[in-house]
Length: 340
Image (tube, rainbow, N blue to C red; front, side, top):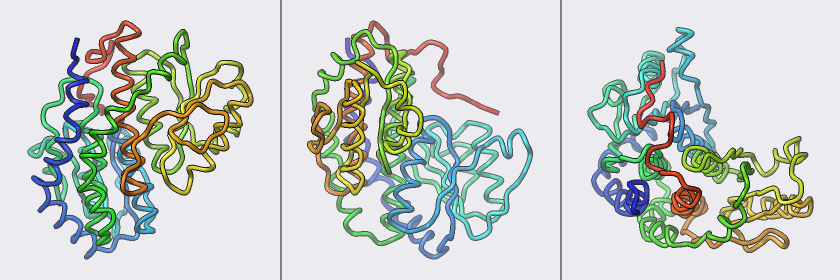
């Protein structure tokens, strides 16, 4: 059976190409608007997978631009009715549908509060787009599976492209142009050995650091959504501050390491957990005890981290079916969650 989720995963490289080409003018003009505004802080507005995309962009912006990024809880406006003072800030609102009332309300509030607001959405005529100063149409196309895949990747790519134009970062923009080919190869990586290691298990840890921590958070959510596996995402550093206590013989650990400054520390900590008895797997060739998983080295540390999710998506879709589930229609979930 070919699921909607599998088809949408296979569409990711094409969707990224479509975004970069079709929304190129908006990305360039948005980047120039950020350059002119020179924000001292960026706030993000998102939930679910979109919030993981925003978390990825937090690290990317802080590492590349040196500008602090903070996530604002939508309930500040939708429930507690409090506007924030955001003069001199930029705001990134990320939503596939652009229809969640609390996300729209916070974007409107951010704009009233003085922020330069950007909507990253797959629905260019949505209420969120109308609430913001600039809109980037993700152009991911219809996404029928409840579990977001191509819209998540497109959201991150859109944010990275804005960042690349803002900072006039030629290396990042070149890596994004090459990303569709990297994603195509990443989808083909075989992680079946990890599926064997999860057989009979009901929970696991997913580790990352820096941008890969956002990928770990997205992976943990997809384990829950599609496989009914209790997965928790941790920083490879934070896992030692308490959570490592329950890592005993056979406990599964998936470490998502990118080719960046954190790779060595992630490998070291994953080996330490393997020494406690964990059945540990890592996307790196720098670990001694953890089992290596294949990965596609991308052209930039940020796109390298992003390529990991394409491999993971292909893996988790197959794992869901292996465990007897339909990844397209997880129980109790809907495609659009309209939170107040």
